[in-house]
View 1 (tube, rainbow, N blue to C red):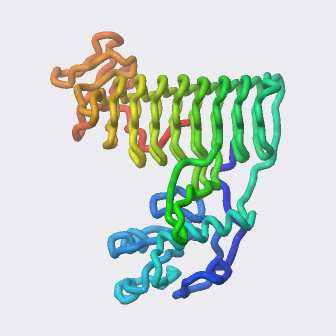
View 2 (tube, rainbow, N blue to C red; view 1 turned 180 degrees about the vertical axis):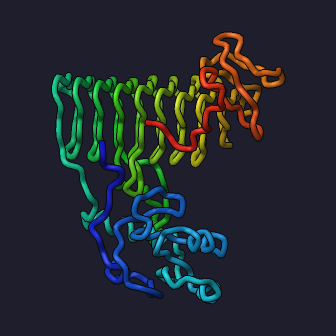
View 3 (cartoon, rainbow, N blue to C red; view 1 turned 90 degrees about the vertical axis):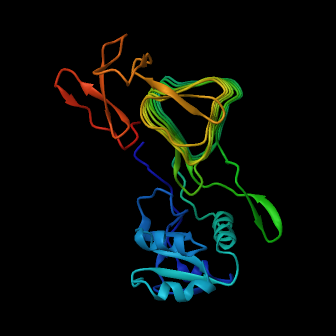
Length: 351
């Protein structure tokens, strides 16, 4: 599972601009990655993005991304900044529309990287399952009836995928291109770590710009679960029936989503959060948050054992497992009793 993202064949900016309304300002650099300003990548210096106002241009200038499509009207604005290491593609058209035109053009040109297929041992794969080329499956996996596994999917060991589930299909992003509404094709993949179980009639969409949608170790998905494109689901999460996780949302480890809960796109749900049944989450959550309702409201906090904890008491101690906590800058932090120190707040996602 060492592949972190997929790239396009390195292409000069001047080649991307052929037959498109774009003028280059800066170096004619190689591009191997497309994405938004928030897309995570190991190659920001080879990424093309877009910006349509001063705020997003400022964000681009501060980033490590090298190349950006902008409207002609902002040319004077970029001249007032230090942009010597940046390449701009100026257009009289809409930058976002042109960006997706280039994305689709590269897709039709078959320039995107694909993974090499491989299959481990002791797998049980139903004869009715459809497994495309460019798929990796580890050892001792169970793939049940009518499962569809699309290209650029990587599956670890001891994974169970139940009937009628689709892994690695396109996500849902609609853009108007040349007067027509199009569902934008996706060029990433799905990476499922060890000991994951995915229930029946579920859908895990692939990443959009070459990144992978991630499902972490020991995470369990119930039936009728939808995981949107480029989402990251950490280890040991439980996602119950009918739940939806929006595109590019991050769930850290040990998150619990109750029946029919919805997590909007582009959010971060920190570790050990508990989302009640039917809850609609439209804001990011701090660790151990307990939320219910639509829109979600915080009604308390839960221990790592999922018992409710009272943060008004001093010290904060779980009545079930006796774990201790402290409130630091309005964030619940667990105390390591054996070492008598605060456990570091994990800013990454554990898979």
